[in-house]
Length: 234
Ligand SMILES: Nc1ncnc2c1ncn2[C@@H]1O[C@H](COP(=O)(O)OP(=O)(O)OP(=O)(O)O)[C@@H](O)[C@H]1O
Image 1 (tube, rainbow, N blue to C red):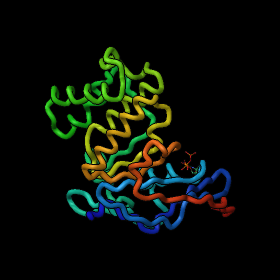
Image 2 (tube, helix red, strand yellow):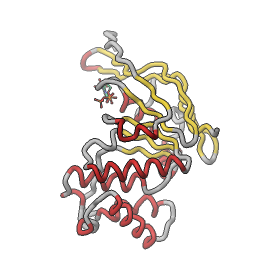
Image 3 (tube, protein in one colour):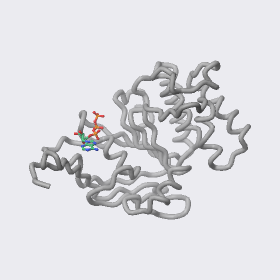
Image 4 (cartoon, rainbow, N blue to C red):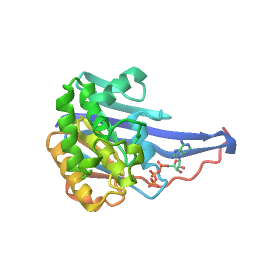
C-alpha cells in the first residue's frame, strides 16, 4: 500500500477572546490513509468533523500535530508548509468538496467547471467539452450550462460545485457533506464518481449525514467524541 496521508497527534483550539474561553474540537487525532482508501468521519453535530477536514486542508492551523501529505513531489507537512506550496497542492493534488459553490458574477457554469482543467494546461475546447459532460452527468439542465450560477437554485449550484470539484482526479479528496441537498439522480452520479475515483487510487476522507449512500465505499470509520468546553482564560 502507498501511504497518501499521515495525521499524527493533531489538535485544534479555537480561541474565543470575547468569551475568555477556548474550545478544543479535537485533540490527539492520528491515522494514516492509503491510496484508494475511504475514511468516514462520524460524530454528532458540532463535534469537529468539518474543523478536522479544514485543518487537514490547511484552512485552519492546528494547535499541535503533523499532517504529512505524500505528494507527487515528496512528503510535505501541511501544518507547516508555506502558503504558496499549499496553493499549488490544492491545484491538482488535494481537493475539498463541499455543498457550497463560490459562484462568481458573470462567469458561466461551464466555465467554472472547466477551470481546474485549464489551470493544469488542458486546451480550452477540450476542458469545455469535459465540463459539459460532467454538468450533464450531475443533472444540470443543458440550457443552464452557459448561464451564471449566481441565479441558480441551491441544488443546481451544488451540482455545478461537484462537477468542478470532481472533474480532475486528485490524490486526496476531502468531502464535507457533499450530498446534503442533492436529488436522487445527482446523489447516484456523485457516488458513481467517487467509486470511480477510488478505483483509480484517490484517497478520501468524508463527512456524510447519510453515510448509507457511500456505505460500500467505506474502508474505515473514525468516531469523534464530544469534548467539554475548557473554561480557560485566553
Ligand atoms: N472559526 C471558528 N471559531 C470558533 N469556533 C468554531 C469555528 N469553527 C467551528 N467552531 C466551533 O467548533 C465546533 C466544531 O464545529 P464543526 O463545524 O467542525 O462541527 P461538525 O462536527 O462538522 O458539525 P455538524 O455535524 O453540525 O456540521 C463547533 O462547536 C463550532 O461552533
